[in-house]
Length: 104
Image: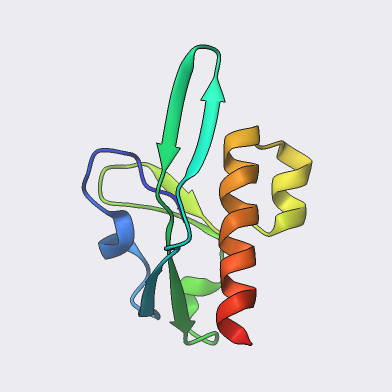
């Protein structure tokens, strides 16, 4: 799931079979990523979702949201096959580490 960056979370456009059960923040520290001469400081927030897997709206991994943009689910192997930026890789690693710490 991705946001188009307009400040309006697309969480409202998720299929009705999906419910945000928990919203978490990585509190360790922000991820700092320098691209060219621009320094990006990224605070990470992620959600845990619950889904009715038998619901018809979940037959597809992608769907259109209210503004016409397509959003969808990607596995880690999907991301590897399409390529992701080093900034996104840093965010994924930080969120994954945080999730493992919380599950202990």
